[in-house]
Image (tube, rainbow, N blue to C red):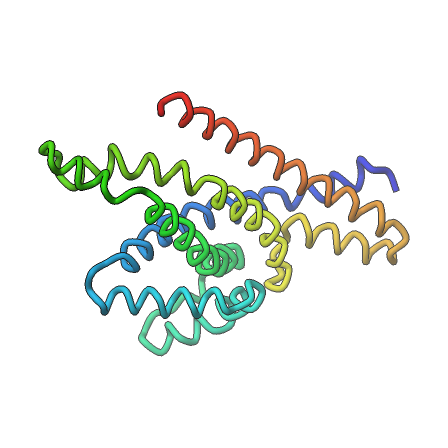
Length: 222
């Protein structure tokens, strides 16, 4: 089979793969920041709640998290009067990946925050800066630079994890390639999956290039 034909089939699943990656990353980042805030809170309740969530999610395989989201979440919410049967497979995929990666991102954000010398916050207060301004102008930029390598690795991991949505019957790049392989009785299987691997690799190269530009930006302004 011609490589162009194989690529045309694989790329049919590219929009779903990119949508999964984009929305899961955005939502997981927001949830991860909230969890970081809870984990660092002085109140024991919020800190303990965040600890429980992080331990539970990090101890659950991403594949199982997707299955629990697809089969378990509708039942759980229906018990409290919320019906989500209208959700698409894409929405369940985004939800499952968001839950899984929010825990990993929260730990990356927390470790980056704790790596910044706390004495800088005290110094900022001593010259009259408010806690909010000191955090935004001094702590956050440094924590962001520290967190970048871990966040980059997590984003790359998320790219690969999007392929797990095949269990939901969502037609992403992996599912399209797998179906094509089955249709050809495995004759072109090696060629199909090599081209699929190269496609994922290209996405990862683009992500690495974006992170390099971000690091250069912080290096210039620091």
